[in-house]
Structures are given as structure tokens and as C-alpha cells.
Image 1: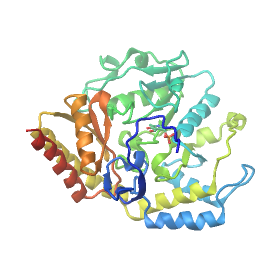
Image 2: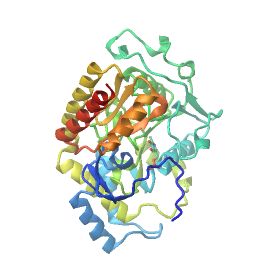
Image 3: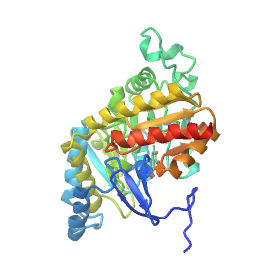
Image 4: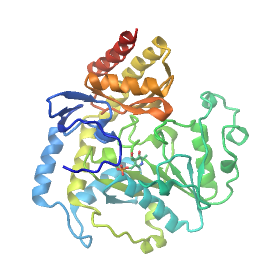
Length: 391
Ligand SMILES: Cc1ncc(COP(=O)(O)O)c(C=O)c1O
């Protein structure tokens, strides 16, 4: 019975998950506003994907790294087309942590002496040691851009007090690892101007842009990738989570400059699960499912509805300060950590699971794109109940 849990847990044993819900061993069904852990972007276990598991596992699941398979080649074509990486390539691994680390390592293989730069609290690997500030990796302290920045044409990052000097002082090739939205779960999307400012520097000094789209990709922000909101062309993209919709497959997409670089031939990666056919076939069917059902467009509509309803709550209750995020990557900032913790608990009592990042008093909503207006209404009504009960 001994399972080691290196994270906080609830005493709830799950039996099944379907669509936007999961069910426990006491037959209680919960609405899942976390999509598993931000993975089930198209809802848990759609029928068509379940069929792919069954058929592909009867053909081939895994093989030696010496061999090739059609499933990964088809998935690669599909993802490179979505990301506009003509003549690029894809490598498939298992977890997002691996993908981000591998993407950074590839970038460092090409730009050997370059510094790595990221906004503070970006996710650079599963172990805390990966995210320490070193002379080779600068984690730029960053709070928030002025919310009005993009509306003021004359404002410039070079003269902005919000933009840290370390960014302004970059005058050499550097590798920038961009993680939009999560950054220690704060769900902060910087102003377009700041991201464009960094991007122009990367371009000017012939650096490399690595986009960590593990959480924000595959439709989470109602675009294929969060960087689509900023008009960027990254050199490397790390994908995971929503790619397998819960199945552990991740990817590193590389553009032509990376894939054709002679130094890439020196890159070696020793791991047993590379380009596995089962994960690739599952991911290919996930992408097909999104395209065929037009889920990116549909998620924009449901996101508008959700944002409107959450904004009404902010107008109604003083305990809510601000709504952050894009698409279905949303965070409601509460007045204090205790409010967020109590609200998460209350919602769970009513069979609704939402995320909570207590340190920053944030209630997190990362539901599947398949979430319905009725399900959102149930959430909003239950939140209102929380305040009525308190009176
Ligand atoms: C931005 C980001 N990158 C990488 C990861 C790690 O992905 P995985 O849990 O699949 O290893 C996470 C996990 O939450 C994440 O949020």
C-alpha cells in the first residue's frame, strides 16, 4: 500500500475520468477545471482516442532507437505544419520536463558560449537545482508590465522601469527561454512590447528563442501556441501535456536553422523512450481531433463566456482583485491566500476541482476546451454560494 507522494495529496481515490469530469471510488463525480494536471485539453479520454490506444497497442508500442516508424513521421509532419517550421524536425520524448531540458541543451550545443536567459521562475526542469541562477543562466527578475503599455505607442522598453537592466544590457548572442503564462503559476502574460523587445534583440544578435509551450501549447490559450499571441517565430518549441491529452508524450520541434546546423550531428541523447510509436499515434489523433472539430475556434468562444462570467464575479465581490490569463489558462486573484484556500476547499465539497496557488492567492482555471457554458455556470453559482454561506 506504500506509495510515495512528493507533493500534497487529498484522500480521494479516482476510478475513472471522462470528458470534463472524473469519478472517485465513492461514486462522486467532480467537474475538472484543471484538466488532469493541465493535460486533458480535449477532455478526458474521448472515444476516438481510446480506439487509437487499442488499435496502436496491438500493432507496436515501443522499439529500439535504431529504428523508425510511420507514426512519429506523421506526427512530425502535422506539428511542423501547425508551427510553420518548414524543413524543420521533431524529436519525441515522454515528459515535458525532459523536453524543455533537451530543447535548452540543443540550443546550447549550437550556441556554445551563449548565456541562457529566462524570466524569473520559469520552469527549466523538474528538480529545483535546474532553476538556480548561475553565471551561465540569468533568471531575469520580472514582476509585471504596465497593463496599459501596449496601448501607448511612444512607450519603449528601453526606458521602462519595469524592464530589468539585465535585459537592456544584453548585447551579444543569447538563448532566451520563453514560458508564457505559468511562471511559478502566476499566470502573467507580459506586454506584447516586452516580448517583441526581447525578440528583436535575439534577432539582432543572432541568438535563439526556445518557447516552452508545455502548458500553454496545444490550444490552452485558444491559439495553437501562446507565442501566436505575440507574433513570434521561435527556433525551438518544447511541447508536452496537452500533446498526449494525458498520455506521456512530449516533443521538441526545431526549425530549419537548428535542424540543418552541422553541430546538431554531435548531439547525443540517451533515453529508452524516444520517438515511440504508441505515444505518437495517440498525439496525432489528439491533433486530428482538435483540427476536425475546430476546437481552437470553439475554445475562443467558451473562453469569452468564461472570462465574462469571472469578470462579473470581480465586480460583485471585493474578495476578488483581478483576472489574469488568456484562453482557458485563467487565474482569479483573491484578496488573500486564505480566501483562495477556503474557496478551493468549498468547491471541492461541491464536486468541483479547481487549482489554487496559495502563495499568490490565485484560484486557477485550466479546464478542457470541451467545457460547457452549463458547467461554467455551475462553477460560478457555487462560487457565489461560498459568499452567501459566509454571511
Ligand atoms: C511550463 C512548464 N514546463 C514544463 C513542465 C513539466 O512538464 P512535465 O510535468 O510533463 O514534466 C511543466 C509542468 O507543469 C510546466 O508547467
